[in-house]
Length: 246
Image (cartoon, rainbow, N blue to C red):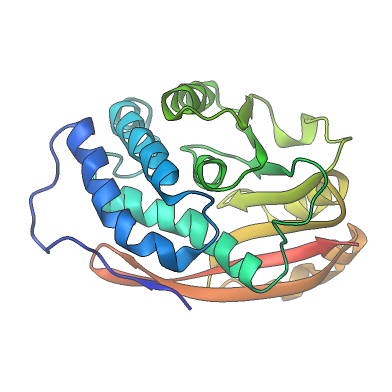
């Protein structure tokens, strides 16, 4: 279980502009990165996320990307909520990041404000395709990729069911997107054998009613891991659910 505490004092005045917001986000993230363990280069990750936070703070209020795009605490929550599940799944050996003789390929569905797709692309040496059907949000993602200096991320502006997935993926992620059954069907087509579907969910979510749909899509070995994450003044119970493509 992960429990991430705020590293700034309660009541501290929030940053007023994108650069200050980004610096605040970096300062909060830096002390906790060593515990996460899946980030290829911490300093590079921090630089990318700092630029991402500045871009989000600039674009967010214009196109409603997140509830509070200029609140550093909110951005930090979403960053941790993007990368901690990856750490849990890697540590449990469900997802393996090493031992490949080719570039790993990840697929993020409904990327929206870039959580988790851009965070994962910032942390891990894999090619990440972000699927976002809403053009304004896709434009933001493309701008963020440029600002972050990411060469391993690509945006597809389309509905997920229209995506060409013939080459197969090692990991498919979705955070607060669609029904599990729809994700199972897509993952069954998108993942190569041994690939992992990873859904970001609340700790209370149950998949009892959808197990037959998962099996029908060729997904087995269901696993759910929970973690605690501070969100404002509250501690939120979160979970990551995974299936493996047989």
